[in-house]
Picture 1 (cartoon, helix red, strand yellow):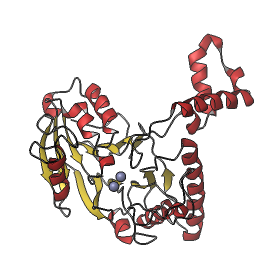
Picture 2 (picture 1 turned 180 degrees about the horizontal axis):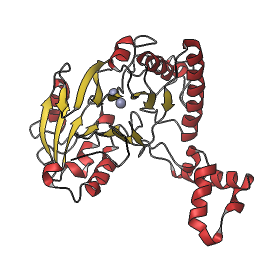
Picture 3 (picture 1 turned 30 degrees about the vertical axis):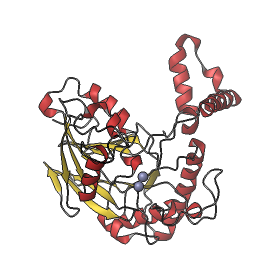
Picture 4 (picture 1 turned 90 degrees about the vertical axis):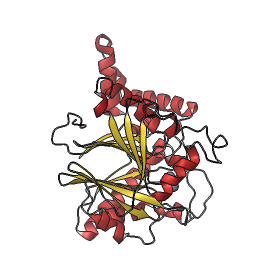
Length: 353
Ligand SMILES: [Zn+2]
Ligand SMILES: [Zn+2]
């Protein structure tokens, strides 16, 4: 079955379900109220409320909201942790099962409603077992639907840890979470993979790369028809530019890297939000400025910064995006090389490659 959406000339459809890092961070009620007040004030201040047509109320309000409000006022980057859905013409792949996988499952069940049982299948890839990449798994409806079929892949350690966390005979069962592996009927198989091996499904190729992170982590590259998407979250570069990672990601159409800390926060010169200035060296995440250098070295077309720090507000994220784009533009002049298009992917974002 063609798993792609109707977007023309698209070989890889990436949909983000969770791009917040470390712990889920839902919007506080006071933040929602603040967004509403700021939005109305901004529209009133700039005379846009006069554009509202009472005879065509919803359409005219939608138009002014879309055209005149910044993303941080009218929406949110989201507060769910790591989960990305990738569709090619050959298969559907899910990377990581942070809390974002709950909304992935809700969407999937309606998408697959009218689809034959033998086509309701997908691969789940785990980068590593830190809880922000794992704890949505027991809450995803699609994994309990026995008409669905998922094969789960992770390195040897990941596959073992899954049995430890959720298997029937583990010491951690019931103290960490009720045992669920016997109940998630859709997960038909857990396959440990050798990090050097390549998974091939039709013309889609999945390869991995070992990342530097406490406990280890894996990057995944999805390639098809000359296009590629790389997910390399939870990695701390040892140098400003990570040449080995850049080689793995060479000419990627989209490269997903850590968007948790700025360099000054990483080095402990400034705090994140109102928090104290603390060195984040050794915490397993690369500062964003260094991610940009690696994206340049990889000649990536776009750089997606995810795993956002949960203390960061939507307005903070938007300001950082402007700073990073200006920073990349300067590097582009110095290097005489086109800058990757930088974005912070928000939940529900569709990115077509
Ligand atoms: Zn993480
Ligand atoms: Zn981690």
